[in-house]
Image 1 (tube, one colour):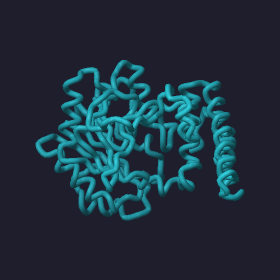
Image 2 (cartoon, one colour):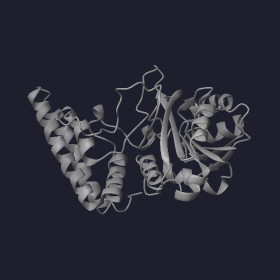
Image 3 (tube, one colour):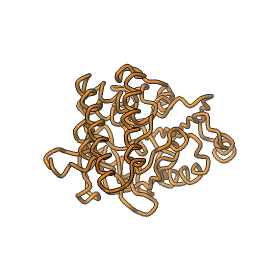
Length: 314
């Protein structure tokens, strides 16, 4: 039995496609769907009731965040495996069987992720390594080439049709062994959105389990469909949403302590200064250059509101 947990937020237009793909992939397997609707403002509940009457739905009266919504389904889980699936993730017909085979051949495998692609077939980051203040700074500023020995969050220069262990896999398709969930739990409820699966995989690996990526199957992932409603991304991704800023502060404080958090904050400011200087030198204008500094301002503000990465703001 695979318990499939789906958190929906304003994605009524994706539900039919997501369920159809999952039903095809689950043919011959025992699937049970658990949907948490995070107070959607669109027609999600009506669509679920009308088109998917056999699916268990819990309708929240407010948006409690991605991690907390998934956690709400913990008391219902009784299968051998748990699949966390986003509404904007459409599984290939063999995705479930391939992921299950990977887990079943390795008794210490606690998590399996698969190759993620966009609608255009472009590869998305799928086999990832833990973020640190340094590797995030190097990637954001384009200085990674100066320190090639530092492992970045994403290594895209290999054939992603293969299989390997990694640190974490994205939460849009994440197959878990139920015994692992019983041992380490699911998501830290302090993360409203972003970093929750990074934190989960870090705890799972610390407990002695492995995280495995397989490229033998794939999932088409649109990306950001729910986040569009929760936090606006800024131009070019050089500034990030307040939700992501907050989650990063919580993550670094939890896993790297106050010193690690302070290093992250310092490197954010240094990175913004470097990017501002680059904008000026390339003649992009002061308005563009100064807009980058809004990222540092958000980090400073959220350091105070989260008590330096200890408590969430929502």
